[in-house]
Image (cartoon, rainbow, N blue to C red; front, side, top):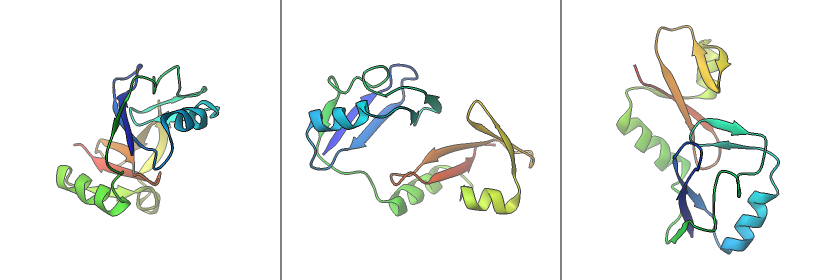
Length: 126
């Protein structure tokens, strides 16, 4: 089962795979978090619910999150180069971070997202 909604701060669409949990159980777990990283590229020092993700109003939908493999295949359909964090490190591309985005030394603009398992993937946007 999925909970589908958007972040109040950034407007990013979010699909949470809650499996067999009820909405209330999912809310309880998320409310217990001290911090979180939104797919919309901001990190907050509070729980996502109710401050940023109003899960009480989100829709319940049938389905599951894609596998990591499906996620990466879809990402590669949209962007010319997609590599994981380990490859970015191996290539020595990242020199630091500013506002959560990578500072790079290769002359390209990179953005990132996290796969359903939480692994970070970088993709070249220019």
